[in-house]
Length: 207
View 1 (spheres, one colour):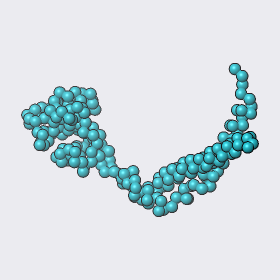
View 2 (cartoon, helix red, strand yellow):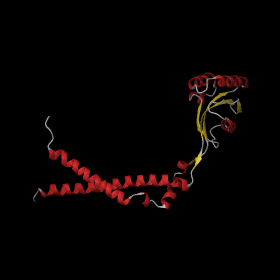
View 3 (cartoon, rainbow, N blue to C red):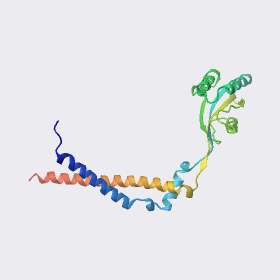
View 4 (cartoon, rainbow, N blue to C red):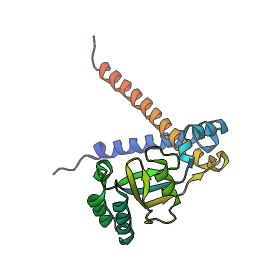
């Protein structure tokens, strides 16, 4: 195989390096953390409230049955399972749950907070009353019969004030704007390069 000529391999690399240096210098001079105003920070904070605050959340597995006697039996079986044995828990759900929709998901009810309305209020309250992950509730009476829940995850909530979040927001905005500025400058360079190439080709032809 023949080696590429120095002109065909070296010059384009040099041009790319020069362009990248020019872009970097231009972006650095125009976009930095000092260019992010307090108004920009506050606007971002208000538009992304979920990034800076979240209520306490839990995740749970539920087993729904119609009969109280069966519910007591299932609760006892759930409490006897090895803690954290998800396979055994799913097997118990598959064997015992009489709610087709939740049984199809292995009993997983997803992550909820105290304001969740997708589950009965009594179930939500019982979930947050459980102290430790893998704890099992006593049967909870609902419109569908009785629900036994197993706590599978706890996520403590948090809340950052605008002042606490300011540094993070400045970093995010700086990064986003640097990317935008670089893309804009690159588009301008490409546009100018295309014009020059067209003019060079047109110069070869005489009317």
